[in-house]
Length: 158
Image (cartoon, rainbow, N blue to C red; front, top):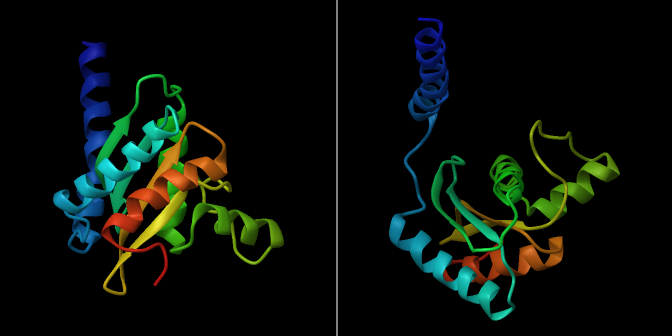
């Protein structure tokens, strides 16, 4: 009986944030087709470099649209990719620029975010449509993979 109650409560807690955020979010601008094009390019770049990474693409509301974890990518890479996407979507900055600004004291730290490179915003027709974040190699290399994906469907700056 206790196990059923815990399972029920856990289910409600998992669904609650999703339901609340859907009610507040605007329509997703990162389509599946755009995400697929970007992901294919980012993955191809990572494989050309022999980098085993996790790549996450989100919409502008920080909702996941696509995820790929190349064989050999570390278990924690998903958590880092998620934290990078969070700061990109909250600030509109690359995660590396966000980190530099936090260190300089120019902006406040975002709870659950990270301060190193690898996450980039994606702009299309002057509008931010989401983020691409990568984790698994050095931060600058993670960013290279993310940029390779973003540049196929847009740019990383407005």
